Amino acid sequence: MACDVPTRVLRFGIKTTPMHLAYDEILRVWEEADELPELDDAWLWDHLMPLAGPPHGAVLEGWTLLAALAARTSRLRLGLLVTNNTLRAPAHLGKIATTVDAISKGRLIMGLGVGGTRQPDGPPSGRRRVRRLRLPTPESG
Image (cartoon, rainbow, N blue to C red):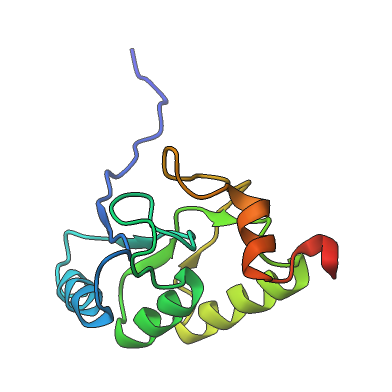
């Protein structure tokens, strides 16, 4: 008896966590991954503070870093796991995403989430953190 179950291709990717690392280290990993045909995707995250280690350690901003890496790679599909929709006004986020998609020549994968991850006993989550950093939010226009 024939089965009409669609077949799916198993895909592999990488996720680099842009905390406590220099740009050159992340770039090296992405450029090497771009040369490996076994890898299809490369991912970053959208957190403004480290989730582990020293709470005041270095963290590179996800969309800015994604744009830089998109300009230096040519094959990998790329995106953020997952964009925090409370950090940016919708029109601003849309413009950022379309710019990264243009830089990457259509390789952007977009995912949205509510945000709010924090270190245990650490800094406040999502909205309070944004207010403390005085970043514009969708509510503030």
